[in-house]
Image 1 (tube, helix red, strand yellow):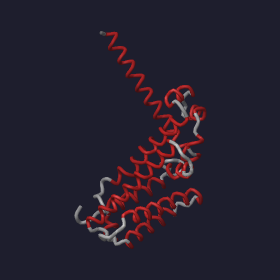
Image 2 (tube, helix red, strand yellow):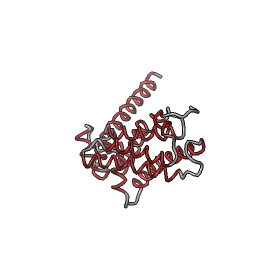
Image 3 (cartoon, helix red, strand yellow):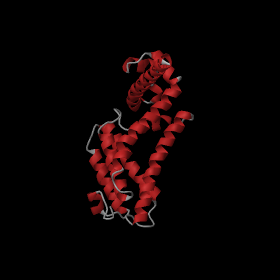
Image 4 (cartoon, one colour):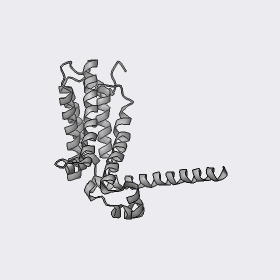
Length: 223
């Protein structure tokens, strides 16, 4: 009995060490991919920077594609932690839509990923390719855009936006402004583009019928 218990403890310990190693490698991988892209990832380079030996990394992910897919999933987790979760404290609809704009801007501005938004980097890299990695990147982007659309829909249903609002158009315009701010801040080294993006996002929501005072408060009267 003691021997069986010891074996179980050792197995749990190995699993925990494996999980920690995997997280260490992936946290390094997503930072590097945000700068150089997913194709630049390699077991050897990660072994030098993680640091974890190359054979251990190969054992964890099996192939370069396995590593890339795991990196996309880890990036989704980080993105959720910094953009989706902070906005959840705002009521659904216009307040949450605006909270998402603020959270996304803060996420890109703070360089949560060293190369700016991870998904901006890899979507350009994989836009004309096929395969499982591209599919994973597309799924992540579609989920994000669908979430924006849903908040715009709820805003229209609540009367925060006109009933005939096109939620997909609102989400497209908001997303375009955020992406532009990220890209220009990287290319030009100009942090002020985030303030311009916020001003533009505010103006477009008002043009779509949003209450400017509600945006300033970040909540609506219905709470």
